[in-house]
Length: 375
Image 1 (cartoon, helix red, strand yellow):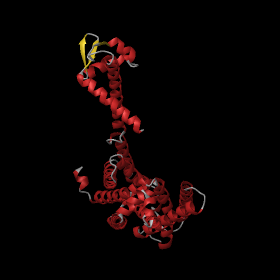
Image 2 (cartoon, helix red, strand yellow):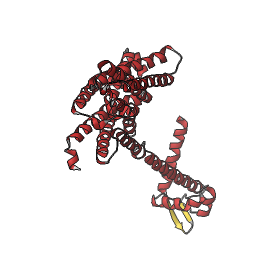
Image 3 (cartoon, rainbow, N blue to C red):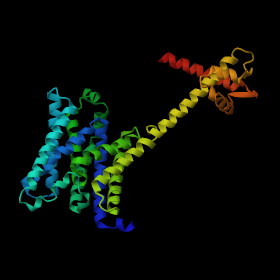
Image 4 (tube, rainbow, N blue to C red):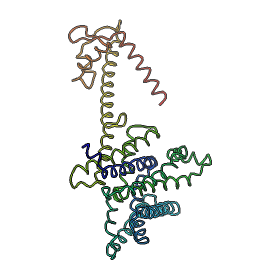
């Protein structure tokens, strides 16, 4: 394993995949918060004809040329989606689906034409469909690094503006902020982030690298800064682990493996993240149900005690069983209330309210009355 980490090829692939994860994770956060998750899918598919046209124009597979072509196609597609949804009665989702299909279909046609051309350079161009991270070279990683810096620097410079755009664009517009131009800028940065990952995971799987890290990070925090950082971290972790698994397991493609790793991080986050995780939600609901059950039994004890002086007069457990719908578990609830010092067992089958239990019930009823009054 340690020999693998000192391998030059693995270092280049892992560095490129981690870089992709950082950029796509950070910018994908804004797409998820703005409920534009499908935009990443549309842009990545729309980039395919740009790659093909760049190859047809230049005749080479230069990483910079192909990235610029993909970026141009992604920007055109984004502007078309925005224009269609604003100037016509076609919904935003419909415009996204239409542009995605048209551009991706056009890209496949161009790829088919290129593959039939007598040009030896066209070999391997179709790997942009599913990516070929294992073929990354250091020059391509440097290019990815430059594009990543171009994408992340404006994000830091316009942090407050993008934050307002993500959560309350109407308020930002009322303050006189150029929301429309900020929207175009943020979407353009997302296009750059997508272009960076096309060679690594391909146009088909790139949307997962935009959405999945942000979805996982959203489970762990409500703060934008922490969410962006976590999303970038999850993306980088998925890139490195994906490169590691594909290097150690024979015939395992790197791009799809990276996507599977980030999907695993999403599943773990959905179950284990505090507050939002399904496991913690189940435990919280179970604890609340148990508390409601205890309160119901204690209120029954209080109702019986209120008919006697003093209120510590004991009452038969059988009576409480009749009063409570969950009679089969009343004994267990009384034992738990006894542990809390709210009731006490006077003799076998008889229970009485303690002074602490009386105070607790009176405060409970005040709180409920206050809640119902303000509802």
